[in-house]
Image (tube, rainbow, N blue to C red; front, side, top):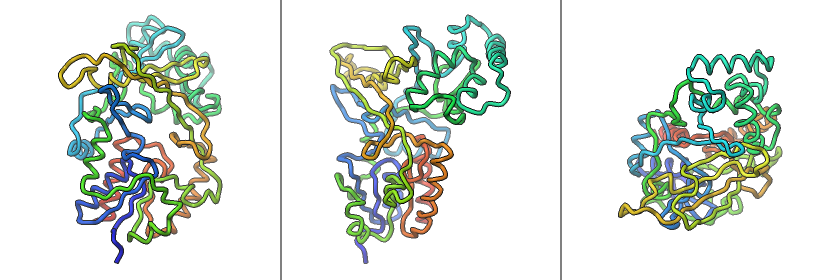
Length: 373
């Protein structure tokens, strides 16, 4: 008999949710992670009474009532709703693209006028059927908005010309002919009060966790401890990069504590011109109300400048490059994974896909239901 039913590699959202579901079903789990903290990329830490999002901003949003009820078992959420703004050469625009954006860009006052302007610019660009991100963006919002608010930002983020990027990337971006600047517009939104780390701690309550452990360096030892493995690390790394490495974009952050009440007046400001090297500045106190527990204004603020970078082995992988070449390579690794009967691959890295947080939670719940029923 092995001492654990499940070895869960990765203490991020997928691993933590699966572990909680397995424990609730009476299973014994060991969770390991090679980082020195739990919660994966949603990890938050406290500094100057501010919960800092170490790996970039994470706003929980979902239309799935089951998922919302589930995460609320482990945390109380605030009512934060993301309203990003864009700075282009000192001009401020509203994101997502909405009537505030169109009015600032063109002076239009009605949805009909905005739509007519977009159609006019799409026709002038000669776009009938979009074939790449550039053409898709112009089709959605016109040439002016593409040139000022999309092109530079996107090329910084992905390290590629917009015309060389697949069009599906821009389809995630909301475009509204209303004055609604709620970025996600989901039924349920917010950030855990006390931070995501505390939420994940509650998920892992009563479950053994080992940190600073590299599973792949001690794979045989750890595999001998459990009947089955839940693996949430990079799928290509699991197989020793036999077919080559999948590509990602990586991100680095410059974090600064400032002796001022308010740096930019918003949680996130995108810098969309190509010449500014960072993509955005995050001011973490505005994910909350900027006050301490006694209701006093926090006297300092913490900002993070976010820089996008080409990923290489050893870097932190963030965004899968879901182009045709990488999808073909991933399909080969999936075929390898199918021949691993005692391993379940899950999460953003294990499945090589971009997941919103609610999708990760849902996927882990479903994996638990299939495995434990």
